[in-house]
Image (cartoon, rainbow, N blue to C red; front, side, top):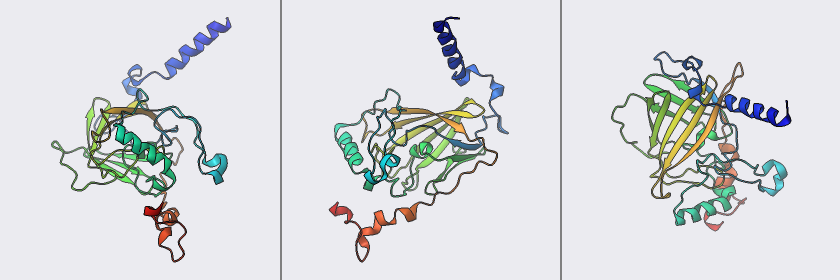
Length: 273
């Protein structure tokens, strides 16, 4: 067998391995008591989307941390790799990146928002019922309830970091409509952001028993000229006792948030930075 033929055979095998869920028998996907796909379990993204949703090279981080704090290179998860910012919003995004070590909501231990909670570098748990589905995240004790029993979804009573989620099934996909955000969250450490008019539609589609394809379509007319979509796989944690551990990070942010209030300030006040 020639080297070229070996390469073709290997490529074909890879394509079959990565084939979408349509190539799988329906029985390969676990079923819940109501016949819908069973999404119960602990899931996690593998990648660098939490650093930057778009294609990005390696870059420097905090100088005192050397390579540990550096930005790793990564492939983007934005469909088309373009985020359609309005000109003034793009300027704010660039400013966010320049001030990320003090202004990023993640560095302050604020709740991560949607969709950012999904692709932070920590596992999260899905607890699935017929009327409610819970998403439990370790970072900052964040969680949310997806309301599956609301034929006429009601608006959020108050804006929040995690918004208000309403869900339904579209064939094999769990579709979650999220709105009611407070506009304080970012999408990543690169400073990508949205306002309080953000509207997110998520899709969780089984690829096989241990993987989901996650998509989130993002719409915010105050920041973007048109809707755009991110897409990435989620993988089931297969450890026998996989858990989502609480990451109580507030105490690690106290000096950043309140150091200017100390009797002997350790950092300047926010308005002086």
